[in-house]
Image (tube, rainbow, N blue to C red; front, side, top):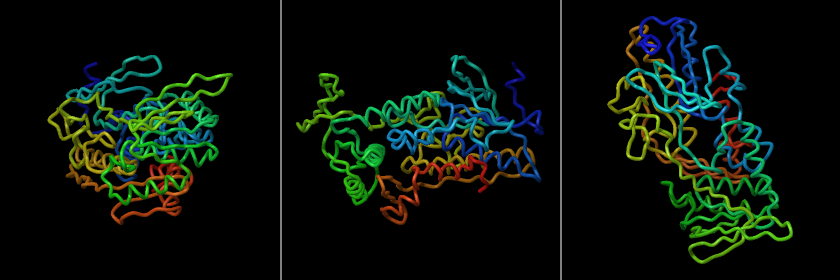
Length: 409
């Protein structure tokens, strides 16, 4: 046991590779793996590396596509790809563990993993650790299933319940998730009445965006056929007793006194919290986000801090949480880990890729249209939808950007 967790420095070989443990197999975690593998595979100076990816799910789930996955049965099939079916990572030096990282021992560079399906604990040694577990989001913002088969059942139940609705489907929460969920549902099932209720006087109220962006989001949502209710904070949702086999409905009341009957009440208020309980408390800020340097190494005073990285939505960094940022951070972390390997093996001083401050920016899919905001201001329309999302809410764009099919950049 002692030798298993010892410091394995020195010349690396296939029998003594660098061990990289990545917690989280979504956008940022997979970006770390792919970019690091490409560098370590360099023909003139290959570096032996073994990558282990731990994830609660048994595959890559395209989180951006959730609004469509919960409206379209065919798209739900596409949005979740088992790790064993991702071509670029089918190689002897990449392993997947279906489970959860419970804690890490930074001093000994060892992680405790609770493995599925038998809830068995196992220890995993590493030379580099990357936290990429993102935010813990509630249903139906993301599926809660851990297996693809269970997720498909979960999605199909939701889709069937909505499709059979006789009264309006009420989406509660006018952030990006609620807007996209309401618009995609109306787009895929145009016969369903969809109402979006938000507690504030503007949609996207929690985001640091100009008012014209928030107003455009409302205009596009209404153009998509969604009934938008602003200044409507949900007070109660009470099941109405069904008669003669009729479908279940709910009496909904808002704080302003407005009442309505809904066939489904879908909570799109994410209440997201960082999934960081396995990290040392001193690595986190007061909201449990991970403090990092621009190199994406942890900025706290923990043992072997230079060997510990964090990427994606769980880091304490500027900007709106977006998958584009997560993939960018994952790439930088992979490249920076490679720089440390080069330093150890060849004595080269590392040149780190460093994150800069990220201004507010967003891409929002609203039915057939999309809205974007960034350094060049706001744009919206069908062309923006094509640029940012295409016809599958960005699945093809993200898949190819991560090179998961083996496509070279």
